Picture 1 (cartoon, rainbow, N blue to C red):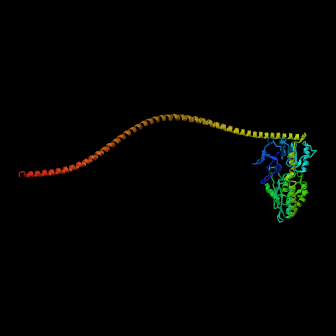
Picture 2 (cartoon, rainbow, N blue to C red):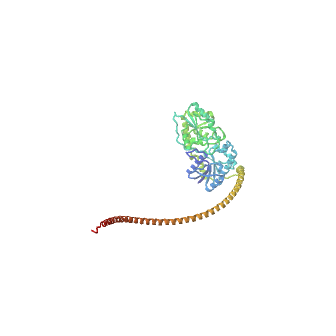
Length: 527
């Protein structure tokens, strides 16, 4: 069988605190899978996580999702989602908690009455966690059109987890008492906690550790225990604790404090914390009016007391008599492994999955009224949403109008600036035109001057070229003259030498002439 399981909250994990509804869904899913069924879990979008179940964000989305998945059976752990699942397949609604009585403490009775009546009208089968809760619901089922002349629904107790082995403390070890879970307004342990601390103070032996304190999902109002009973040497508040660590702490404690202020809800509900205590072999000190008290008394799995005086006496006995606590712990473990084991507790659900069929329905006025109230509530919610959207839109319009007025002023100011700038631009343009005219004339003159200078430059360049040619010719002529001078110098040097020789010759001739004259004078020729 393919079973669609609809729940809220993140499924249990040893690494984080868990919620009761998710724990209930987890045990249903594990039992169904162990029996060979295919289980598809879906949860709200706010519980989305990597690797987690499929999520939905509205009743319409859930209906579309369920129709597309085509399950053979539907199991709804959250009754408020049941109307969206009616008719998809045989539908079982789990009424494990008396939400109608819880809602009275939260001011939500009217809304929860509508959820309950619509869930009962949609369901083909229902589950209860204990006989008292079943009796409380039978009248509501009759009003929802159920035939209550024969037994209806099944008892599926809360499953006790397979906790770690029990760790018994030595006689010399100080005993530890635990109180776990969320202190919902309908689960107020304040008087019992105060009396337990006082009893331990009196005997000078033992301490109390309170685990939890805040919901795992949402931010609903709870009792602020630390403000009512301040911490001290005998009392410690550990806060929300991962499930694995929490069960380990339970397995090493002496006993669990499970007395709460009496009210109708406590008389009808079995608590997930009670299942956790028993699964760890931890005996409970509980009130006689609680829904599990008869089972605990019959099993010898704790102390069932009628008032706070008897509660305080039980705390003293547990603190000073470890053997008595150990015996009750063994009974608690036996109860968890038998009546509250998954195989035994979930057996009725497995039978329904095999034999399920749609229920014959009788038309009754209350379910129709609840549907109309729900539709009216949705319409009012839509109207309020529309009104809120209108209020926001009007506020935005007013804001935009103010912004528009401011922008208009700015535009007007900018328009004046633009006008002044336009005038300035016109003036600048006039100056520019004049400047262009002047500069144009100057440019024309400059162009003529440039042409004249260019011609002069060309003439100078031609003249320079001519002079350069003349210089080169003069240099050639100078070189020629230098060569001629050199030759002349050489020839002059040769002529000088010849002149010296000639001079010498002349001198010789003169000397010879003079000698001849002298001889002539002497008349050399005569004689």
